[in-house]
Amino acid sequence: MNKTVLGIFAHPDDAEFVCTGTLALLKNAGWAVHIATMAPGDKGTNEFTREEISKIRKSEATESAKLLDATYHCLEFEDLYIMYDRESINKTTSLIRKVGASIVFTHSPKDYMIDHETTSKIVQTACFSTGIKNIEIPETPYEPVPYLYYCDSMEAKDILGRPIPASIFVDISDEMHIKEKMLACHVSQRKWMLAHHKMDEYILSMKRYCQKRGQEIDVKYAEGFRQHLGHGYPQDNVLGELLKEVKIKN
Image 1: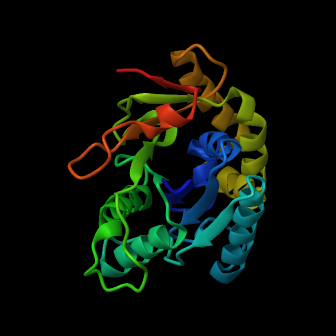
Image 2 (image 1 turned 90 degrees about the vertical axis):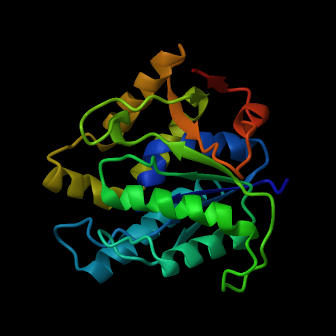
Image 3 (image 1 turned 90 degrees about the horizontal axis):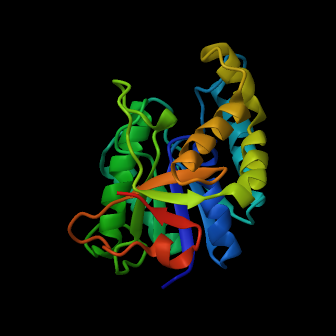
């Protein structure tokens, strides 16, 4: 197995909220880490132009990734207009093939924002397509299909407020310091969240969420996941094999 893990999300800072504690544990276990976003976060501002905020947010994402010795990629789509189409599937499949990911993390299929849900669908198809040779992209196909894990939705609930339970929990108590530092790199978003969401608890809200998941398995902080187990995808839980911090809850 190629020891490369890739997190693909809609916007810069999404990964920091939902999976960078687990990425840190995989990095400590010898895995190469890549973090990608479909868009540069070009709408996440009330003070900059699209070009200015895109440059700022990609720089913030790059600095955050460096804390894990990780590589940041942006597929350069546009906030609010992430589409499930030929271009998005091809570019996402190309990225997975380029880095040779064996494990992929992405958004929950149900989340508060359509960009997140669409990204989840694109990544599902792109993972399945890593071995399909007749997709018209230059990167060499490979098998098997990567392990695919869905991260928690924002606040672990759907758009009707119903809870979305996790089935896989990773104890990230020892890695919360790095997760917090990574999220703190996204300085521009603290101002944006205050203006748009009326929320000045950027890091504190993340920590409260991780505390809530941690309480479910009697640890201080945890991240929650569900594994894609559809036909053609790996059926064993590789996270449980790689990380002693993983707990399964049915």
